[in-house]
Length: 111
Length: 114
Image (spheres, chains in turn green, orange):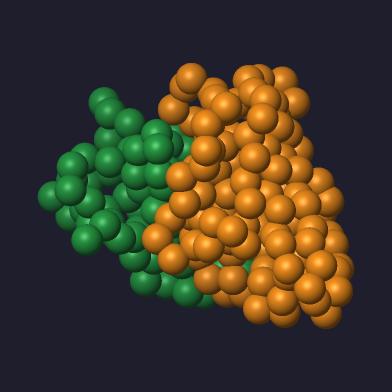
């Protein structure tokens, strides 16, 4: 079955600290991989995506993610978190016709 | 990036009435549009996929007669929740894709049925 697991429901970090949000997936083939961010009451904004090629992907707002095929993972990282990064983060996998979303990780940032 | 506008952002309706939500691609032609439903503290669940000029394809468990989707043009898709009930209260999000692989999301609509 196709699925996405984000094991961390809620993460709290201090501003300036590093961040890693985990994402594991189960999919029949090598999927397209995405990370989205959602602010309260808002839609989703694409942070980055992986289709093929270099497994380390750079995105907007200083985020990056690394695709590890052997671990079926696509973890999101940021070296130094800003207070404005507080939001809900969703990992998604799929193809052009359908995306499967994880349940999200809520990031809280303390000053 | 491309802009997808969803309207209204919030709507309150009485039980038994219908409500229409619009999703517009403002600066590109959306050959495919997707409608999602997001429950509190839950992920997004794909409800249906629509291609311009064709009938929408609904996901398993989604009532096509309750959630009417129309994709009449390359820039507009609508979701009509018919005979709404309180259990239909949710956050509905659309996304739109052109010929490329990336889908762009609207800002969502908070539907409350009282």
